[in-house]
Image (cartoon, rainbow, N blue to C red; front, side, top):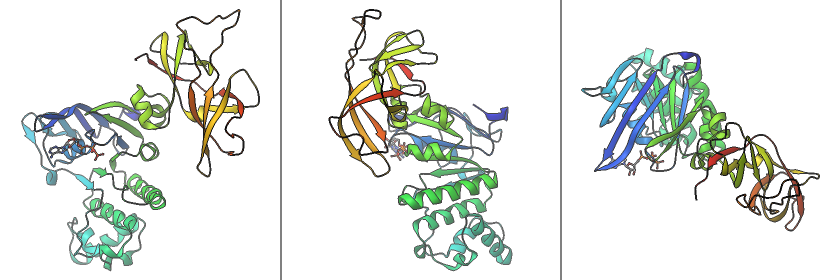
Length: 365
Ligand SMILES: Nc1ncnc2c1ncn2[C@@H]1O[C@H](COP(=O)(O)OP(=O)(O)OP(=O)(O)O)[C@@H](O)[C@H]1O
């Protein structure tokens, strides 16, 4: 989907690729608007890097079409190699030339030489929030995060229209990872470069991108804004891949899903009767009273939050609403999060409430 209806900067249509008889990409469609950032996220082996390498021009698709800024770069009888596409590529390890200085690494992609090149190297270092004096250092004299930023500066030197980032932050430790990600994201946004980030880290995808594409088994299972893919995943596997999910058996009647957590509103349910209901753990709160009750089974302390496993009370009907024999019996164990570790000792009886809407998937055994 394109924001503000601008034509796609990158258009990938029906792309297929197999290796040695194994289908790795099975018909991928993706559109990326100019200057926007898309994260391709998915489990290991789902085909993310293969797709990125086809977009870069490192290999050719078996079928389908790729267009960059309206021009076909891969199609039925046409293929433009990587060095003739206006594309930058930053790999997982940065892949700097170890024997060259930082300055020479960055200047490698520059058309200028001599003083003009040195000036431009300085500008590019500043663009990635590094002092110009780093130009004299060798890659091994830099931290992992600095090496990644130099790799980005080298890729930016060629002024690509499209930047492809293949898990560029995965080798960094947690703190450096967040800081480097933010610096890289700001640099690319300021330079107005259309960007695709491949990652298997859900949180990274949701925080970095305007658009998230979820890859599963060689296909894009869902494409949408981070908010939409997280709160309204199209299937259970996508829901569980993008974050923790509480999935309960439920009975859908109109727009209410009846389950052990009560009647949960659902917008546009895809089915009625027996269904799976999905809630995010943060939607389930400990209440001061109320009819929905459970007992703490155990807890895990993580510092700022504690995960609490709770066994829900089985569902009860009453004279007015007797339980239908098809309806779920409840009594499931769910996991929620709470900031107060003291509140939820094993054995404690708690009341619960649900905020917001649930998402429903058709029943499957
Ligand atoms: N050149 C190749 N020759 C043979 N098989 C390949 C080749 N490149 C990739 N594959 C296979 O294609 C599948 C998808 O690989 P790909 O690297 O695209 O996955 P990925 O989603 O990027 O995984 P990861 O997150 O682990 O990097 C894997 O099963 C891989 O072994």
